[in-house]
Image (cartoon, rainbow, N blue to C red; front, side):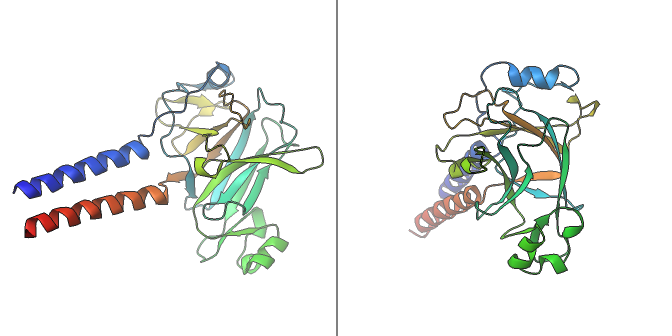
Length: 261
């Protein structure tokens, strides 16, 4: 019984540790008052603290049953890159595979809806009527129709900065490990009951504010590019789940050997 109790103790510790690295992850410090003010001052009326109300897991996402990813560009405050920023989604496993949603020509208030092909083995993302089985049959056909095939239904968000000629200077990802500085450049906030309103309407639980810091040497204000995204759901990072599984297996094997002894 002593060994069994010890195993239960290790399992409990592993589960607690998993909570710390996933949903209960430490918040990213946000400097200045720009983001807080912009989200809580009319016409926005969110009830939120940008330092304590951050979503824990925001690296990867999936779409819901509608297959739609609705986006509203809210504001770009302290960035010198507004005319050159590019925002979109990337393949979780192949970050170089991307679908652009907004670019430097877009301004606050602009909307765009990306779409995933439903009821298909192809993880095809694109826009409007171009997302059909015939236009997503393979990578070449998808690209010819402005679509992109991902290796998995899960995706992350990215923000790229380009120069005046359209050359990419840097790309920042919602998944920290893909960033060259390994720093967090995006924080997310979820709506829901008691969260106030955005754009003159209730801020719903299926809506997320994604706030970006677009400087490689992060200044930490996270008000450089802020977008409201609807009908998506955050998912766990695969590596985190693998770490938990391996940890529990190791603990189990160790205690099993002790029980046999």
